[in-house]
Length: 480
Image 1 (cartoon, helix red, strand yellow):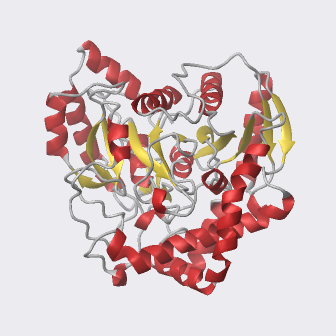
Image 2 (cartoon, rainbow, N blue to C red):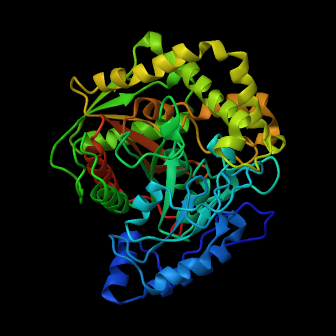
Image 3 (cartoon, rainbow, N blue to C red):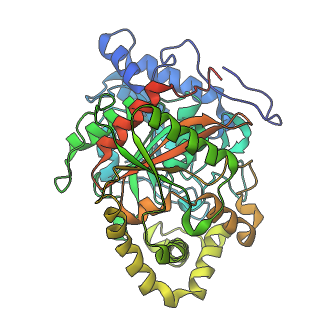
C-alpha cells in the first residue's frame, strides 16, 4: 500500500498481498469458486483496504455488517462473493439515497431499485454507498463544504464524476468493480480520469433508472466501472441474462477480439468547436495509429450531427442540464425527500436553476431537437462507419479546485462545459460508448479515449476494447 500525509499530493492505492490480491473481479470470483479464498476473506480484505485509503473519501455510507452477513452465504452469479459499492443516487433497501447533497435527508429505502437488483444479480456483495457530487450535476466529486474525493493516481487531481467515489474505490484496489451511472458522461469521465474501463450501454439495454425514466429525455445509463475489459464484458452478459433487451441485438458474452476488421471514424472536432488540448489530441492520434496497425481502416470524420445542429446541440444539452437543476430545486421535497432543504443546495444546482428560468421559453424546441438527435446519430452508422473514435473529455484531468462548486456558478459552469465536450452526445442520442485508459499524460495521469457505436452494438465496442488491451495492456496504478 502507498499513502502519505494529507497535505502531500501522492499516488494512493491499497493493493497488497491479501485475499483480493491484484486480481480483477473475474479473477477474484474464480478463486472464491475454487475454494482458494472465501467470500468472507475477500470482503474483510476490501473493508481493510477501504480503511487504508480512507483519505480518498470514496465511501459515502458504509454497510460493512450487512456485507459480512452476505459473505457468509454468497449468492450466485458471475461475480459471486466479490465486493462492490452502489452509487449514492441508487436505492438499496435499508439505506438512504442522499444524492451527494446536504439538502437531501433521505429515509432508508424500502426496497432495492430495479437496477440495483439487476446489478447485484451478478453475485456482487455491496459494502455500502459510494460518494458522488450533488445530484451528479458536476463532473468532479467536489463540494462547497467538506473534503473532495481525490484521484488515487495523484491526490492533487480530480477523480472525475459523478461516479467519482466508485471510480476511486476501483482504481485504488478497494473493490475490483463498482456500480456507476451516466447522464452526461458520469461512467466514462471518471473512467478516463482514474484509468478504468467504463461502458455506457445503449439506452434501454438495462433496466431504467427510477428518476431518469420520468424525465422528458432519458439520458441515464447504469453500469459498472472496472479495471479490465473482461470484467466489463462479463458484467454486460449478466445484465442481459437478468433481463434481455428484446428490442435490440444481444451482446452475448464477448471473450476477446473479433476477426472482423472495422472502418473507424476519427472524430476530429468537439461539440461546437470547444478546444481539445494537445495531449488529448495526441492520445487519439496514437490510438488511431495502433488500430490502423492492427488492420482497421481509419478515416477522419466530423461529429455525427449536421453542421447546423452542432452549436444547437451544445446549447440544448446545457439547457436540459439547467432544467434538471431547476426541477431539483423546485420539486426536491416531492421527488427526493420530505425533509429536503433547498437552502442547503450548492451553487451549481442553484445556478443551473436560475439559468433555466432565464431561458425557459426555449424548452419545447430544445427537447424536440434532443429527441431528434438519436436519428441523426444513427444515420452516421448507416453508411460505412462501424465505430467512432474520439477523446473521452476535451483536456487532461484538472487539479482539484478547478471544478469545485466553491468557485461559484459563473466560474465553474464554463469550465465544466469545456471539459465535458464529447460524452453528452451519447446520452442524448442513446448510443453506446466505452472509455478506455490507453495513454498516460506527461504529469503521470491516465488519459482515456472513447469508442462509440450504433444502438445495440456493444459487442463490437467490447471486442475492439479487448484488442487494444491485448495490444498494449492498460497501465496499472500499482505498477506505475
